[in-house]
Structure formats: structure tokens, C-alpha cells
Amino acid sequence: MRDSILDHPVPIFFEEVEQFTARKNYSPAVHCAPENLSHLVGKYHFPKAKWIPCGLNGCTRQHGRGFVFATKDGKEGHCGRDCGQNHLGFAFDKVLAVYQAAEKAHSEQKRLLEWKADIEHAKAEHARISGLAEIGVRRVRHLLKNYIEKTPEISREFWIAARNNGRIQAESPRESRRLFG
Image (cartoon, rainbow, N blue to C red; front, side):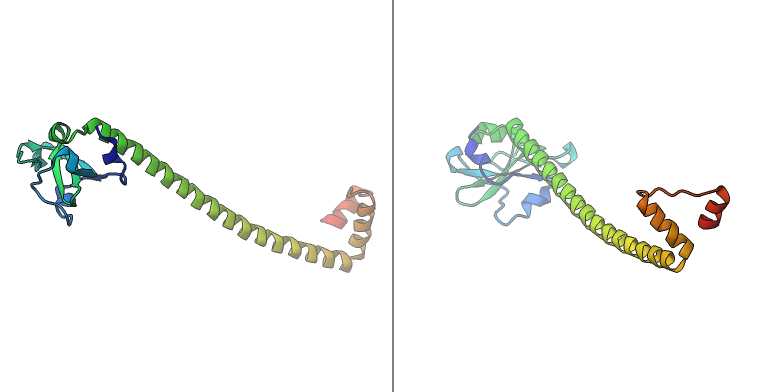
């Protein structure tokens, strides 16, 4: 198989006949020698009920698996996989491997883009929550400061705790209940 036909953009996987017969440069019957082949446009694989006649070099044999190709003069046609190999020199299995590799790469790229979007969303959510937490912390500090300043007993205990590295010591359980509820 000539590698140059696969050096073009990733071939299309046609799921319906109309997807390639409606293309601007498509012709149902194309004569093409291997040296006039430009590149592979795509491939198809249809169930037996949807088989179509081969359009390469006058062959009209019905088939369900094949290729859509482009000639150097810009025409596009289709051919069955056997005619593709016999007349144009490319093998369905090798093209299928190219498709599978391209589909895997596309799937992985899509997954990476989804992960990137998820990460960006998580960063935005983190920033939003951090902002809300900062507002909450400032509000609690403000309320605590006001409470401490307005309640002399709490203020005294706060400063004692501050001198004791944050340890709160109640003189008795009754005193603790009175101060802290």
C-alpha cells in the first residue's frame, strides 16, 4: 500500500451512502489508475441490505465495505475493498488501523480537553469558595472582636488565653458554664 494516500487529513468514516454521494466532487463512476490516485477521503462499512455497486473502473459488483477516494484531478469516487486493493493498491485492514489510531487519538484529545475544562471549572469554584471563606473569616473575626470588647469577662479570659498560648482554663465547671454557655 502506498503511504502517500494516508498523508492527508484523517479519513472520514462514512456511515451512510448519502454522506459521500452528496459531496461536491463525487461521481458514481470514476476511472482511476494507481498513479492518478491523490488520497483516501474515507471508508465505509454498510450492512448487506445497504450494499452498493462499486464505482471504480467500470466494476459494478455489489459490496458493503470500501473506500471513498480522490483523484489528482479532483474527482471523488468509491470502490469496494477488493477493488481498492486490486486496482489502487490499498488494503482495507491497513486503512482500518489508521482509522482506529486516529479515532483513539481524537478520543484521547477530547478527554484531555474535557479534563482541562473540569480543572478550569474547579479552579474557578475554588476561587469562588475561597472568596466566600475569606468573607466569612472576616465576619467571624469582626463579630468575635465586638463580642470580646463588649463583654469584660470574656475579654479578660481572652487575654489570659492569649498569654497561655491559646489554652483556656476555667477555674471551675460552674465558671466554665457561666462564661461559655
